[in-house]
Image (cartoon, rainbow over all chains, first blue to last red; front, side):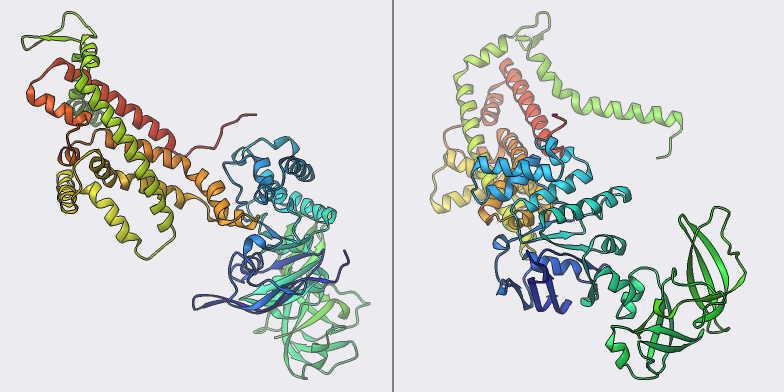
Length: 367
Length: 266
């Protein structure tokens, strides 16, 4: 299985429920063997994308191609995809092995073969001992794994997961994230994972597709989304960020200055041609992560400004300071994240400090 | 809930007990007296006996009526469960026309039985259908359909829609989904509905009297016996019917109250 070949392609796919449009002209390619996460707030249309691919809903317009062939009108039970539902949708009247074997038994696979493959699938999700239990006798995490085993036993080309971890508590969710990731590596099947939790997305995905209001805002690796968001929405939605509004100055090689209330800030624009092409004076934001911001020392050349520490919040391994910076009337609230120290942080509330971030750790997004 | 002052609690308890005794004690009179014989119009309390039950067992009219009742009950159950389930499946998830259909289905159940019975009687005469056990079965089915429909529909509505989606998603056809997912999840509701339908059919009197031919069911037979005078085997019959009905209700409750598919078995 080679990566970078497209398994599934959505071509200008739209979906409306009656007069209400929920997806506008979506184009999306899913690569063979990747773990693609569709991330978005509720109402962004992310679950609709999954339901359209799975065939649970008809398209309003557009096409879905699998290996280059149009499957837009292929009925749900013929599509080589399987879904892990948010509520797991385990059949309550069947045992675990009955549930897992269902996809094979409706295809009239021989009993012996079913038994062998069910045992294999349950082994993979570490539920071998629970084969004869009913779903009502399992914990949330176990049900989750049954649903996964049931989806992957038919060896689908693509597994669709609809917020499958939403109902689990935090610790179990972390375990399941690692577990899902390891299974995906083991069986090398393409996973399409829908979630509203950006931490979950960062932790698991090869690529993330950020959606908002029925549009795809950005598609890229977690690293790209984190360090090179292409719009204000992604910059704000994906991880903590500081955004300072301003007007773009003239391009300086791989960097570009922006005039803000905090003064002139220089940010990197490498690899982002649309930022190079933007007109001088265009409205934009300087964006820099709380961990990129630091207390200025003598060596910092640019991007210096002073601020007052309004609040300090201890968050375990790190401490987050809320800082008010900029001239009166145009005051900005910024976040600064520094490693916590056992003897208490060096920062004090109410103190005025000089702050800085390196130009290559700042980026720009157009307003 | 706020606790009431003690005197009012006692007062309430007394009233409740009195009402319960007044309402329900008559039910126990025939049961108790069925174990005693009646001589010269008075109950002979001196020696309890099962002779009334023995007399009942030898009464061929009653045995024939019992057989008729069972035949009618079974036929009614089959007809009403099949058609009630089909109607519930058809109208589940449909918006248009559903409230009208429900109204139609519930009408015979809520109307005075004598009106339903008369309406059916006139209808059968108009279409030239002889009064027989068939007309009784039709009458009972019309009457109990609402119960089965309602029971099955409620189960359908509580069933997660994703179960059906999951079945299709796993490659099942519509037919496979129906037989292997939908029907098994409805089965306990159907059994519960069937038991209730049987209990209703078992003691339905008014409609039966109007639409039956020459054969009479147990309650109709009882009605006829009462007109001829009070006899001790009536007590025995009433006691038996009462126990049977209670048994059916207990059974129905077991199937209709949601419970886990299976308790710990490992």
